[in-house]
Image (cartoon, rainbow, N blue to C red; front, side, top):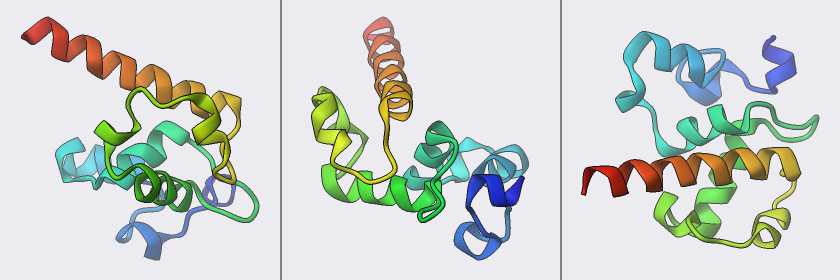
Length: 103
């Protein structure tokens, strides 16, 4: 499974995937990149999901900076295809709806 996810333990603090860290320590202990890597799921042969997540955050600055962006802006990031972009967009929409519900 580790090869499939293209992650190694050194990249995520001794865990073979950020999901293991989430299970053991809780979501609040994960970095933004680790949370995003879980949403992305898998990387590519050249780039692990955590590196793709780090590039997304570097490009947009934060989760808030990602909100409302056009799909084309995400497509410029190597390793992101339609399915991964759809997952990100759906997650951001869920967060928006939760915030609207608690206001």
